[in-house]
Image 1 (tube, rainbow, N blue to C red):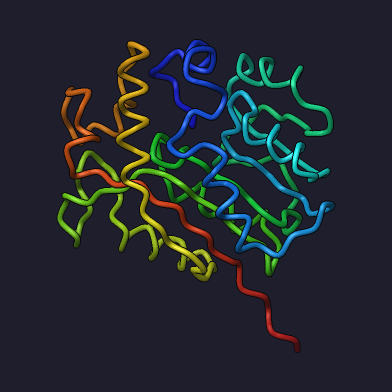
Image 2 (cartoon, rainbow, N blue to C red; image 1 turned 120 degrees about the vertical axis):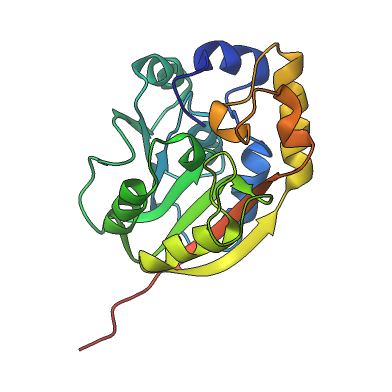
Length: 228
């Protein structure tokens, strides 16, 4: 998760380095679907304080890249990581070569970005043919299914259309609304508000726990070009 409205470094210290519903348990569920080796290149876009990168190191992955716009969070992540390379940058302009990434993770980041089209195009650019895209995030369950306008969040239909439009095929879609509610409670107990993009156009802290907002895990694979 990333953004500028909250003190993310302080949240990392009070809530933990994985600032998202489900933490690395959902990451592991996604990895079950992906055919990867220890030498697969994994990029974590919006890596924050490096919670996922640390977890991936611990389970044996050796080629890891973390991207985040916050120099402060990257500085906090660096001491706990051994092999991961950390880069300051934006999701809309990923400083990696095209078709080099085996797995791109975007965990609880897309919803807080100012736009989704440019990041999704970048994801498609850097992921190699046959590579994987894993997104976990909030989505609108209360908005007009045709327009998806509920606090600016996309509906499931819109998300899947955007992913397919960038050359990815859906492998898994799961909803984990209970984890979202639990995370909202943890944030409130820590004295923090949820990101503005999650509030469905309101300023009420408990909006995520009352409906209109769901949480999903999606795994998609980039189509391989047919042989000539």
